[in-house]
Length: 284
Ligand code: ZN
Image (cartoon, rainbow, N blue to C red; front, side, top):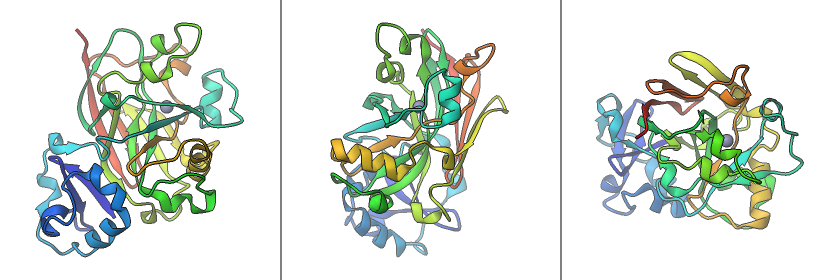
């Protein structure tokens, strides 16, 4: 099942590419606000599953600016660093023995299309698969973990590398939280849509040139392992967001190094989800 947050309303996207307003079609049984629905995810999926033939607008008629992030107000945002061995190598760091975790602050989250203002410094790209939690919990086992995931989407963990590496300890959370630095979308895809949800292609391009490509099979800690390890320490809540790490090909690991410039178009692809498109604009 594919869902989307369109004009701030939760929409089912049907197999024949129409969008159905779930709240409207269920006569208000579910909130139009997608974030409020993660706590009743099984119920929502069952109801939305019955709406495939309901009346809706053509997906093609939806303007890009109508798409919002599929998780606009998560209570917790986790991001996993160094989760692909080849990316750890290009960063000059060891493959971690346990998950390396930071956050992206809430105000950095944004939708799948539009412009991103470049702050001063060196802004880098990181395509990531993002998991949004359905039912939360503590001490979730790896065998059970996928059942707790509401859906998957594409994300960018944009990173200002100068601030990230300044000071005596890395400033991951702050350097990755400028406005627009956490875009997600355009769709939330339920894990059962994948033959193997542990093997998903992802890539990104700048002005049409492919800079990153990978498959989530190469994760050091696959999503079930991330959920198990996180939930042993901090209970996960419905609607929480997990950025799961980036494959190799970021700008800081290149010789010479390369960073985003005004005018660049960054296209972010995740298999089954589709593409996000963002134009970089100069900061003040
Ligand atoms: Zn990242």
